Amino acid sequence: MSYMLLIHEPVGQRQTRTLFEGQAAYDRMLRFADELKSRGVLRAVESLASQDAKAARIKVREGRAQILDGPFAEAKEMIGGFFLLDVASRDEALSIARECPAAEWAMVEVRETAPCYT
Image (cartoon, rainbow, N blue to C red; front, side, top):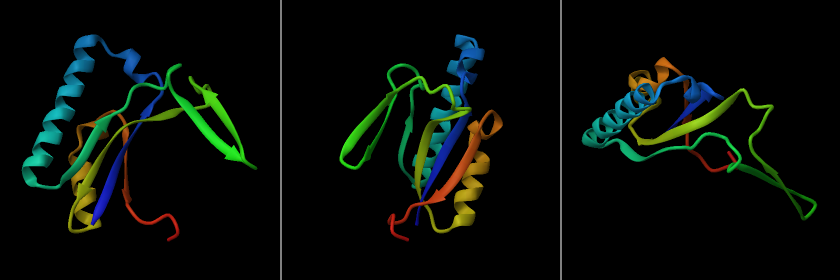
């Protein structure tokens, strides 16, 4: 079964860390990803850049595209990254989420992947 762990971070949290603290947190996440790879449950992992002026949101209504460039002032949280897992059960995905270092400074959302019509 595929599950995604979405890392929800408070907007601006990264800027409160020193460079050393940020690198240490990132290194912990890299080690966590390496551990998941060695266990054979990691399908994909990525860290996402902050929601700055490079981010954009797009929606299409009645054939017209609307693009909203970042930063997104109304956002209190941002998706900071994700882990895509291949595990036997929801309980296993939840167990892995509890091990995730980001759970100490962010929220880890666990979602099963599925077709969008279910």
